[in-house]
Image (tube, rainbow, N blue to C red; front, top):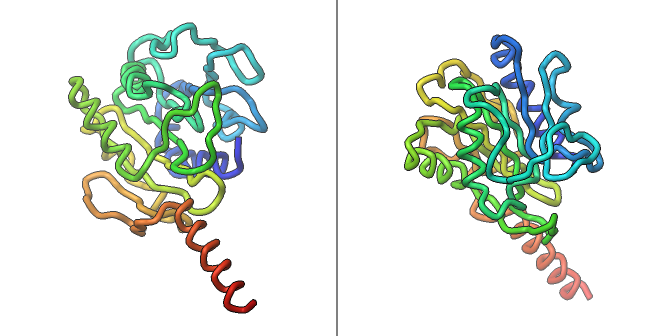
Length: 228
């Protein structure tokens, strides 16, 4: 678990936690919960019920999946789903997204963090990177399957090795007024932010973090050649 992943999830609970707290007996489920150099469990408020789900029995895992595309939970039984640094390793993450929507209560939230950059890292496979329109593509996929979710916001974290793509989804778009605040209203270190019911891109950037680093390296090399 890299530091920006912890930071972004903490900002999610800082922003949405008080609204989630209004629910009774809050249940939070994390997909990809194995504790590797830390876990999102530490960001979850202590009075929420936390359930860690993963494919292997390991530290931080409460439920071991036998089928990555079938979650062993009843319909509308969770208030929050979390997934960080996991969807890039799912061969068909869009099927997981539908399962998450099935298990969420109508007012439930899904916090997604997945890299938009970084190195090839198999665990056991490494299939995808997420870009600014990825969240809206997932919404289109869910609506094609008869659901009515909303993406409340998304952004790409600036800096770090992974340039985390973060999105917050709501199962039932009609309940969006329950969550009036957005992380990007106060966050500064992000690019290509989007919010519900707006086509505007906040802090737009055509270059990915990896591209910006490459441009900087080329500039430094060019300057060394000129100076030399």
